[in-house]
Structure formats: C-alpha cells, structure tokens
Length: 68
Image 1 (tube, rainbow, N blue to C red):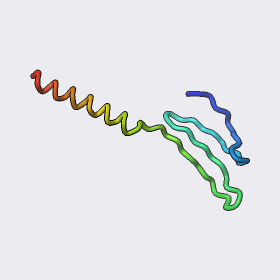
Image 2 (image 1 turned 60 degrees about the vertical axis):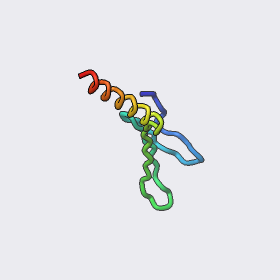
Image 3 (image 1 turned 45 degrees about the vertical axis):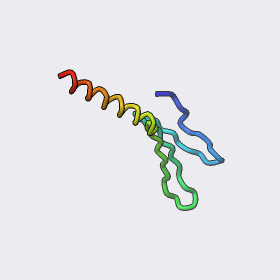
Image 4 (image 1 turned 180 degrees about the horizontal axis):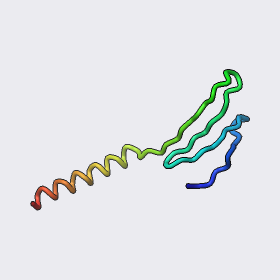
C-alpha cells in the first residue's frame, strides 16, 4: 500500500483519505446538509483483460479434456 496523506484538498473541499486492502476512500462532511459523503474507489480489470483471461482458461480446459 502506498502512503497517502490523511487529508487532501480537492476543489477547495477537504477530504479525509483512507486506504484499505484493494480500495481507497475519500470522506467529507457536506456543509449544506451536514451529511457524511464517502467515495470508494476500487480498481477493477477492464473487459479486455477479463476476456483474455477467459480465453486462456477456456483453452486450458479444452487442452486438459483433449489430453485425458
């Protein structure tokens, strides 16, 4: 995990930054409503990468069936 600062300023809004396993959260308090706003960023593989992995796994399973 990279070490990020605990607070960042984005467009004059202060966010609290938290890093977890495989995700990052930006939290702030909305000044108008007083509600807590939380944005969660989770990296996901793009569809091209998933398709390549699927094709490789399918080819592996076919080869296993053929060589039995």
